[in-house]
Length: 138
Image (tube, rainbow, N blue to C red; front, side, top):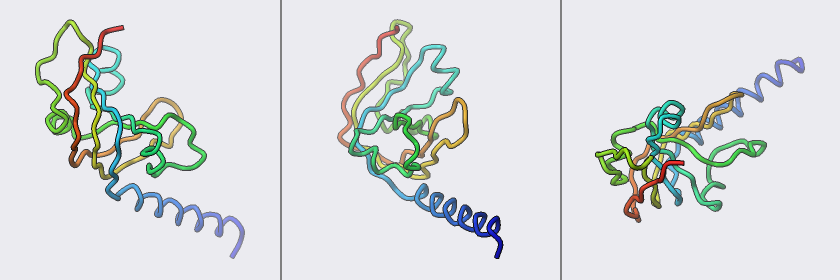
């Protein structure tokens, strides 16, 4: 077997292993944010995002070489807002909501491309949810 074939086989195996990890259920503790300012809505598409605690961040299936801040957005937009008790009514006097929670996510997908992008996951459930606080506009 030539060297390029060996490398191809090894990379394929690593990608499959990473995909399997990404499909696992993860339980993480940290902070959630739902931002409603125009810039955030354009960039994040109205998704709720989660910032795991440093200990929980170690559980994320990301390459060791990935030194970006550990955070991800929840792809099930409406269900995430409902599960995390984010108010349906948006106010013009604030720019979103934030709170703390322990979440169980699945289908975690790290963003591995270059440029702007973010990791994603599907929120399955949450507990120890604090009442969402208003995020002031900057």
